[in-house]
Length: 504
Length: 118
Image (tube, rainbow over all chains, first blue to last red; front, side):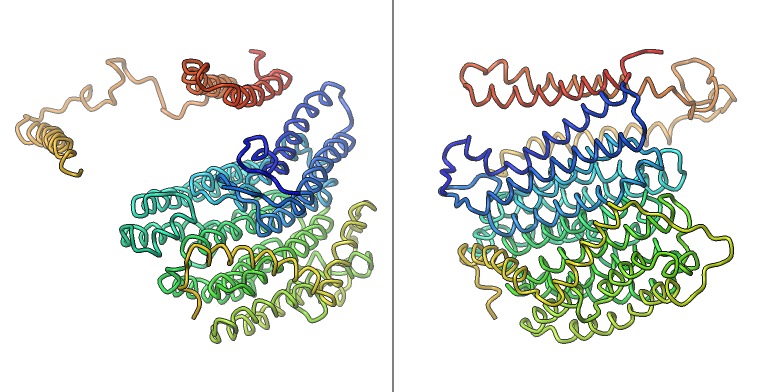
């Protein structure tokens, strides 16, 4: 069906998933104060509010699916309706849903306030969806803040824990700092190009009509802001501490969805607005990608705390994704989208098992605590091994196919050195992932260790995640075609604006 | 275009020079005879009572936050109210949604017990 964008009611339809999700967040908040009066049991409260939040996510997913059938007509506003944004929305919705699904026992056991927790996850997801869909830098900034402020609160959500509060403060201060960079970059781009619309910026830059120096400076600051948010190498210092101190479900959500949203916005801005300046920004992204991959993987080797190791692993995956940004072609963009989806599934799966081993609390993160886990919980041990192998990029898993497509994108742009660094650091990463698997299977449990427990629902979700990862490792083409369509749309619009800088 | 901003630039220069000049002149010309009273932090003439990092009950912050939210609401509502007739129903709908979201927040706050001063 076609949608006339001239009418403002139809513009609201373009935002339907976001609107549905915002309403769901408000319903969850109001329900939480109602249930609080009813004095229900903590587990029941977490379950019923989480169920409401999941229903909201499902409704938003239906709306997002419906938008695939809609073809807009006429001048879009600040939000575009394109396959890229819709694909990114799937990643965010999946990340939020999996976070809620695997964290039920954690939320109940730790006495986190479930209403606020789930409402914040939904609101952060709204911010992410707008980030991926907007073509206006000011709206991008607002959406980024919507997401970030929710993420700061989620980090500090464990009010009684010193570490959580510390992580929240660190994240807040550095996050505000990076937002300032981003905003200053937007101001300079506006000063140079006279507009904050991505396509108009692209047209102005291509025509050489603006002040090029200001646009370049603004682009640099925007790049710094995004690098902070995605945790690229010289700007990654906050990540390990924040990821380690935050409650495990928040860490999982940040490592998966927040990172994916930052990458989606990074890609959209640098593809749609600045692709004719590719020669200026690609060396910077090149070095950031190389540094991130090397630094994150080397430091991860020495970690004995599994949660911290997963934090560095998330940084390393950010480095692999930056290879795709530096490659800047259709295949690379599609591979980033593919990788983000796979990465979301495998990271949330790994964190799901981590929460089980740590007894749904903030203890037992050391690698020694995994000794004998495979013997006492064979099924969860197998699932955990699949997630670790996929994170390492073992053939037959989704993580492997994602890396293959990233390498293909890099080869398309002749970035051979970066491709070699990607392959070598992947080999290095096998050590720290497989070390955990070795403890799971090869070490006997110490005497007197308690067996970890997991509800059936969590085990079922983790089984689903592992199944999808293996399916994507063997039959990746369906998802890849979707990602290619999404990437094609993004690049096509870049070319429509008269950009030729990338066709080399 | 840029020449029309020249007076602003001159004003900026004069005010900066004025401020810096006063500070520097008083620093250079002023005779220094410190006494313990003069060295104390200035709190409008009162003798300081204790540490600055006193702890307040969280209730004060709740009230302050609610105040800021509804104070900012008026910042959006008054300009709309002034031009409501010419802006039409679309603006009315937007403002209604905005106020509705704030009302949800108010209900949440109320049921959470923030407004009870206990």
